[in-house]
Every structure is written in C-alpha cells, then in structure tokens.
Length: 175
Ligand SMILES: [Ca+2]
Ligand SMILES: [Ca+2]
Image 1: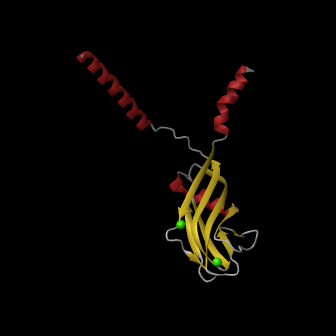
Image 2: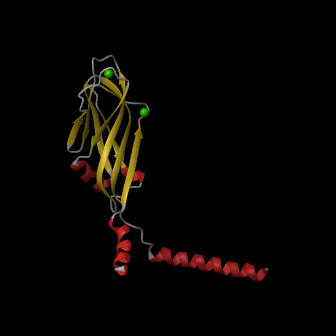
Image 3: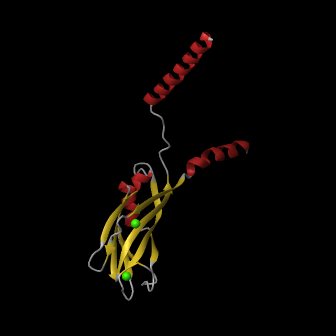
C-alpha cells in the first residue's frame, strides 16, 4: 500500500502539467472599424512562452475591447477566427462607450495554435463604427517538454561545479 501511494505521488506531476498562456495585443493607435473596413491581426502565443513542439493548447477565450465611435443608432461587432465567427449574444450595443466581447475557442483555432502558436483574428462591423482598443487571448493547456539537460550542458555544469570546488580549495589553502 505504501509503495502504491508513493508511486501515485511520483506519477501525479507527470499526469497533468496544466498551464495558462496569456497574449495581449494593445493596439496603438486603435484602428477604427466600420462596415467598410475590417481589421485583421494575429496573436502569437510563442512570444508568451508557448512552444508548439512540446506544449498543447486545449481551450482558449478571446476577449476584444472596444471603444465607441460615431453617432450610430447601434453597433454590432463580428469576430472572425479560424473556422468560425461570433457576434455578441446581445446582438448590438446601444448607448455604450466601452465594451468587451468574449468568444470561445474554435476547433480550427486550436489546431492552428497547436501547429504554429498563431491565432489569426479579423474584427468586423455589421452595424456602426467603433475602435479596437485591445485583444486578449487566454489559452489553457498542458505544458510538455520538461527540459532534459543535454549531455553537453551536463558536462559543462559538472566542469563548472568542479571549477568552483577547486577554487574554494585554493582559497582555503591561501588562508
Ligand atoms: Ca458607434
Ligand atoms: Ca489600445
């Protein structure tokens, strides 16, 4: 029984290495979006430490932040991501000045993220005009590749420790 518990404790950290990566793009200046001008950009999760070769994205939330512009009756935003598009559930913003819209992961979006760490987004206006202030991508998944030191760096490390030991001995003798 004790052996079983020990084995369980040893294997637990390897079963799940849950991790969250956050990528924020703050547009400056904020691009204006109208029914005749959409705006495309990309979240590059590799700049947030995501490594497509070893890490796995399993889910994400994408939130965009908008500032109103123009005197429209109302505004409707559409967010395009690989394989799907999203319009805010309420359908429209009335009498607003600042708003955020959150959309969930698309299957194709997850495939792209796991392929190269990049999620391409296009923000469109179905009605009205507004500014795109910022975009935040929060990705959850598993962090793989617990870095195993290569033989070369192990040898360097050993040489470094040996050097410190030798130096200390010399210092000790000098005293
Ligand atoms: Ca507007
Ligand atoms: Ca901004």
